[in-house]
Length: 224
Image (cartoon, rainbow, N blue to C red; front, top):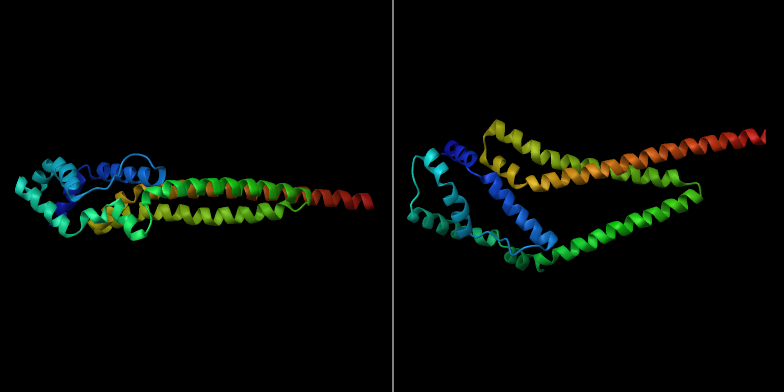
């Protein structure tokens, strides 16, 4: 039943297994490291089901046999488990090689660095034209709003799934919490960095605004 299955998952190394698999996928797709990490139905049965046979015996009061493992693998094959977890199948459906995304992320990184360099040039030009606070104000608001949204999304994935699982005991929320943990942490880090950038830009805007007021007051006194 559902309660036994939930307890079974809690007694297994599902978190470590799912986290390790997700890390291999991310390393392969984003960093271009390692070999194809695709998990087949055979891999899942051998690495996870067989590896946690003691947890199964404890919660189901039954020890799986080789026939049981073969049946599980066949059922997973019927549900297209291997295709669902296959990077090659993702590439076929997407129309491009997923393992080439590492190059795309490299270009994105270069683009981000170029954008910051362009921002520096704009900021310098703005300072010379005495309009820096408008530029810093714009980027301060942008980084703050976007950073808050990204950080909140990561927080909802972690906390929301955990709270939902606690109150409903629905296994889907347990799976969501652990399978999306790497993505949630990434969103939290990106959102946090953007919030820091937003804070710096907003502080800079306030300082520049104060300097402009002082300069204007000094100029007015000089005229008088």
